[in-house]
Length: 442
Image (cartoon, rainbow, N blue to C red; front, side, top):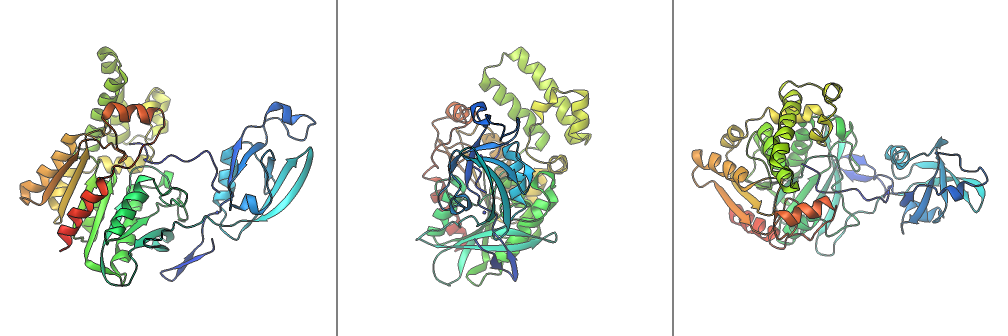
């Protein structure tokens, strides 16, 4: 499943070290520029070599770039003496930096080259007048992970929620976007009296550790287990009233975490109830139909999909080797996780996992979601209730899609996603979750 969040074209590249659990984890660098290719007319005079340099289109207020005096129409030539040829060069160079580190820049402005040493500042934190936001850290696999906690004001013990997001590599730290669904839903739950915690994936946001793109499922689960243990230990959290909320693949990862650390209850939304291999095929066919592909062509495409997925998930053949044999598999294997991660996910018998768990469970499906289905969610409910009658509750929201956006139907959501457009968070989803959590926290 695609990530819920898309990175901006703006490079929001890094606040001072933050104390957490006896360890310090500095903020990532916030350079704060948006960049574009250099027009050929601006290369006149030979100061900007062919294939090198990036045009600074905009400088973000409050960023390192603004404080350093960078301007729109400057051309960035080098970072730490290394030529800049693409935005990936900038991201790669700055990703290794933290707030307080320095970087050397080589720039062209008004036909002149000048160099500058810049001290990087950090991303601003999320904040709200309604509740407290704490930037902490947990240790997992020998590396620190960023943990973001929201809590109602005051120190009385509260029920709490650990949030587990969808597949892929992205930051869940949103200082510039209060309306993104994850932040908005967790903020609403906090206003309803719950402490919440998000744990960044390895190598994402402020988190240290291996790159997210190469990490396996066990690594991801371990980070959430560390977060859950830390959340339960908070003096303002009632450890007997801690829940997990999982979205998308978080509806699989969350139960794996709950197997290791008991929780009061689980809530999952827009997730998968079949095995992953089945899901890949069913989801692909559904979306090919929505594209309007003729049935005969769908059949041929599905045969390719089966071949590619069988080799990747069942035979455990590396993607690179599969592509050598059948390059057309590239589109069918465009999944933002490592081979090991997907192969571990594919090995899970979800029905068996759900029947082993003890907590009551809320299962939410938005019928405008074309990435999963109502049937997937009913499978989870049936598996749980078969062994613990009444333990699972199913709620369907008729006009919500996979991303928690309010959408008329699957076709509208499909069109919006294809156009890379976003919507507005459904106004009822946080309320539905909060009502269920409150009932189970009594």
